[in-house]
Amino acid sequence: MARNPVQVLSKYGELFGDTFRFYIGGLKEAIVTTNPAVIQHVLKTNAENYQKSEIQVKRMGHFLGKGLLTTDGEAWRTQRRLIQKGFDRKQLEALSSIMQDSLAESLQNFDRQVGNGPVDIYPCLMKMTFAMVARSLFGARLKDEDIDLVSHTICTVQEFIVRQTLQPYLNPWFAVSGELRKHEDMRARADNILLEYIRQRRHKPAGHDLLQTLMDARYSDGEGMSDELVLSESMQLLVAGHETSSNALSWLLYLLSSRPDCLERVRQEFDAVLGDTPLNYGDVPRFEFVTQVIQEALRLYPPFWMIDRMAVADDRVGDLAIPRGSTVIVFVYGAHHASRYWDDPERFDSERFTKAHEKQQTPFTYLPFGGGPRGCIGGNYAMLQILMILSILLRKYDFQLSPGQTIEAQPMVILRPKHGIRMTFMPAIAPDRHAILQESK
Image (cartoon, rainbow, N blue to C red; front, top):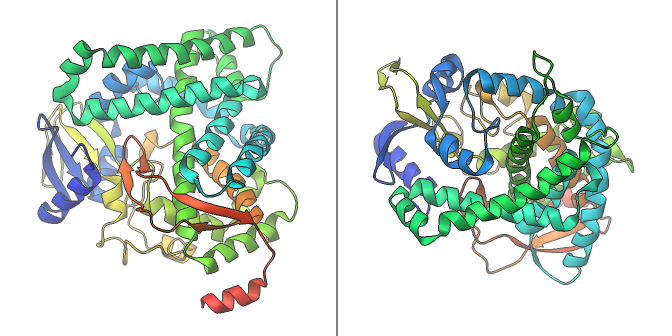
């Protein structure tokens, strides 16, 4: 289970059906489900009865503070309303230029790396997306070395949280051995860096980034967020915002590397919609085929492979009794790969998410950004970020998968490639695109 919970839960799903009881780490009983009726009930219909589990409230809250990811009830609703403004259409249009500037800078480093031979695309893309999210939050003032330190801290702490969750019997050892303190000290260093940015910003002209949205937000009594709360929300947006997109992009490039026909259609749509102009948020609805391809990659490799909730009171969904205090694990990866809901679910099908096919989908079997009132607040930002990076990478480079490597998904907080994904990138040569399409057919 600690090595690969996705494989374990998938195996038990085949043995015991779409809903079964399971002991996490041998200690904590949970109800694991891929049943869309149960998922809809827990995440939407009776969402008020289900809070974030101890995994998120206690473990993540310990390192990330109280914010959207780690609170429930009225406190969460209040914060959600305030932060939502940072992801509306007007704000995303304003952020587009910040994101483009960050991407241009990151691509200079990427050019240098790929010029020296094959690269592992996962850390390259994670650095690219983290810089973009960090500058969307804090503007251009955030230094490269500070971005690197905060990014490293978040990744290291996430891995530790997963160990605490999947191997809870080791938690006493983590405390006495100094492992817990080591990760707390890392978090404190990152917190201090970001808190200093926040305090300096209080005395500077207003910007157009997400930090400004957080600082301008006002509660019903006219008061704003404290610096510490702005820090917690900023850190949680960084956690939720960067690795999801880099994972999606890594798996997408991996899938496209074996589908030249699909890749060429993606490039053609970028050319037709954008020409030589940079991508802005207003362009997003115009990408029909590219969006289908992204959706299919998110189905095969959902960044958040599970969602966990805890029942506040006794509940029932059909014949399933959910006692008070029970942990319900919505097994997103299992739902995305269930043959009862998806035809040939292990196959990459670029036509699976056409408008005609989408109408036939069973609700709550596709959950790349969650579902219900607690669905991902930054879903539109993530789609903008993925499209923006793809629009340049795919048209600037030809790429191929390096031979002799094992590609395997590793379920941490995010479903990341365990051994990385090594690729070779070459400057794109404009081909006879019609000939490529004919050949692939």
